[in-house]
Length: 305
Length: 241
Image 1 (cartoon, rainbow over the protein chains, first blue to last red):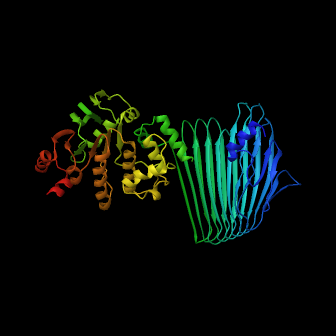
Image 2 (image 1 turned 180 degrees about the horizontal axis):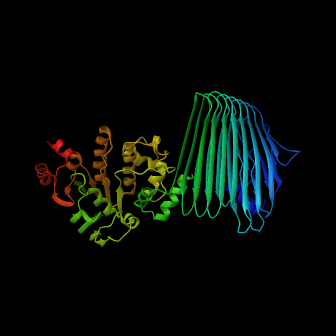
């Protein structure tokens, strides 16, 4: 790996050197490193670009890293990754994509990830997106995540767009069976003229299934964001969706939380709060000796932590 | 340490000017000073003015002999003035430890951050990693606010009605906290309060009513006059009756 690749891996996946456990590192459309374990297999797809990650039932305390790096300006990379989380497994999956674009062409990565979470399996999925480079070409990331969770399964998604991504459309669809749980924590920061759109659709099909979709975002400069979240309660279930956004400069956020209750015992809640940093928050931190700018940074850093 | 010279604060209401503070002259050098008086008398305005949140329309404010009238909130804080809000502020994402660390101004260990929480009667391990958000009650926020002031340890600590919103059990602890602070803190504590027990531990009491200082002196000098006057707030009158 060269220095750029190492630096990007640190930013998007907290990888310092070669990660432990199973991993597949993709750079400019090619796999540049892979490791499997006794319990986790990674297989290259033969019909389309991408990989299958197969985690054996009962696998515990193991992790999989599957970061993607794009450093070639003008490259459009598309992958289909399928994750099979075996019954009763408990694993962490660290994904993430970093684009370094120093050229005039647009660089784009579109990942279509499908998760099959089997009965009573538990998975934590961490995904960071980051862009850098002084080229005029755009840095574009469009992830699609499809989640199927069987009875008693649990999935937690932590998705973070740190900075430098000019355009993103993030689509997530999920369906949950009896007693299944989905927790989504999304954090997005946009600046300049960037745009970000996130679309969540969660089908709570199973009895006592639950979903909690939480988005925190900051829109700076002239950037704009759209947050669409729809939770469908099709059984006795609990669903909560929340969007908190801070506006700075001329940033814009359009939040559209939506609830679709199709069962008498569905309990669904949505919340949305958008606004600038509260004046009393700034003043409080200034009374601790921080400048207004430092106070603003602390508030934003805390909000996006 | 702190001196206010001919300080006034006026606001415009329609076509008329209303005086919130009128020609205030004060010297505060004592360890523990309480400001009391009826609601709407200008006490919170005075505290905010000392902290730099609002500026006087007339007069000057001196801190350790330096004219700080035109200094910002940040500059005054850096010179050694702390201010505990009457209504503590909530922050989504910032934890109790984050705020105590910011108050201290340097990186501190979890153990040190916890020690400040323990001093204000909070079980540190239950609070240290909690977000300072709506999940905390008003009383809990008050105590965290006081812990932040203790962490700062500045020369002048201002408290705006620290007892407001605190239950009786917590209030008893609060008195102990202030008594302890008085011993430990290397500076002055200025508290706005209606509570007799707080006034009782003050070295000096200042009565502010109608935007004016109507009395100041030791507890023995001020409380009898206060009781005899119509300016005593109802809470205090009831307590002392």
